[in-house]
Amino acid sequence: MTTAPERPLVADPTPWNFPAPIRSQLDNGLDLAVHHLPGQHVVSATLLVDHTLDVEPAELEGITSMVGRTLTEGTQTHAGERFGELLANEGAAMGTNVTATGIQVMIDVPGPRLESALGLLADAVRQPALTDEDVRRHVALRRAEIAQGKANSAVTATTEYRRRIIDPALRNSRPVGGEDATVAAITGEAVRDFHRDWFGPQRSTLVIGGDFASDPTTMINNVFGDWSGTADAAQHPAMTGGPRTAVIIDRPGAVQADIRLGGWSIDRFDERWPALRVAAYPMGGSFKSRLNGQLREEKGYTYGVNLVFTPLRSGGYFAMQGSFRTDVVGAALSEAREILQVSDRPFVEEELHAAKNFFAGVSPLQYGTADAVVDQTVLQQSMGLPDDYLDQNLAQVLAVTPQEATNAYASIVDVDNLTLVLVGDANALASDVAAAGFEVDVVTND
Image: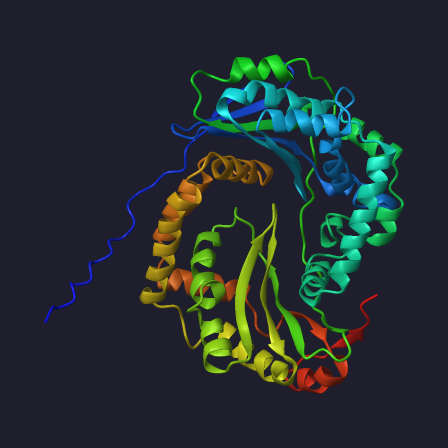
């Protein structure tokens, strides 16, 4: 008879540091952030245009996103399919991403093909075609996405929650991609004018990472050095929360309801952020969290529920989110409010140890590629954070005590002052939700 080998002990994560970029600036004002990453032979580069959605005309909300969507559809020198062929010839993949704080144009390419690929990136940024035909096609695609989102209760819940949790007067409370009426009004001429007014080297940063045989600055200067433009620096507005509301978005006959329950929160600059980040993990950030343990594992109300804190460039918000059977929504809301409060059940060291091990252990894995390192630097840049933010934050996270986690969490999460968005059958939900202590308005999903 053989005995099973003794299970090995798992050691705590070893110290790790986020790779620091080398910063410089071209004569035309374009900022550079270069990550030298040995062994990363696929180079990742992102051009970040510092931007705020508040400059969009009210009748054309979503135009920033439309510029991003059409940038890679061809340029004035390489039209349509030819541009795609040139990218494929270099083994490169290009894409765009528009957020509330910036426009990102991204490319991944094998190192030996970098200079040619950067030329295509520069071409797309500096002189995109932005044809009427491409704009009309992407307008139609965006409008189809909006219609599809309205048919999806989870998407509807998330969209409507953001609309209510952020001050409705602020552009950031509405979808980055715009809404149907404003998107429908976007024309090719408007997209071209918007690109001309808001793209320029003086408000842009090129973040690049990979295994470079030599300093890529000269190569970058050869490609971007003669780019000109005078777009002013973006003025990012201060974010504020909206008034407390509770609403059911009616979906007659639905057998489950999507819940978003939460409130206004803090950004990464707040001294409470590291402790709040740690506290969020045992409350609703892991499978074994308090919320998931009770509402899924014990009660069987849902397939899964979590608590997410979303920091913005200034301010932020949090939400408990999940899909629940219609017949248990009232009970789930009542029990969730009990679980969310920590006055009689503060966080303990065992919970924090698991959270700290997760954050310390996942970082070296999360940032193991050039693409991930560049993405993090772009995020920090767009949020106004320093290059050593991740190291600072991780050190602060590892030093959080149970009392600090409990205090930070309790200062943000007020279970008697929560905003609620429910998407489900209003007739079946209204009385149970009222019994759980929420006075709700009922609206249609139009």
